[in-house]
Length: 61
Image (cartoon, rainbow, N blue to C red):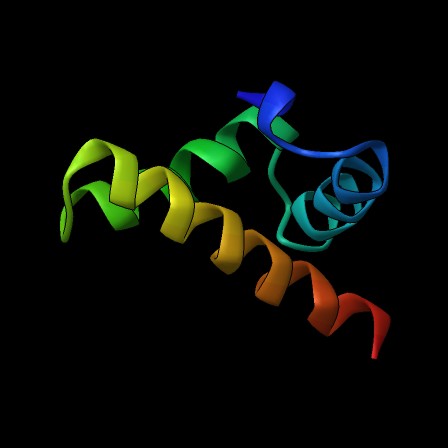
């Protein structure tokens, strides 16, 4: 799943996961599962990407 994100994204994801007390894979699975509950797979993955961007941006602002 990490292949979906740039190196910069992955650094931000790692920081957000640490902030939330989770490992990176668990953090990403949580985000994707939240989207899968609401949408089809392709839409869920796209939505998850934007959610990751939003949640990691909180760390940097």
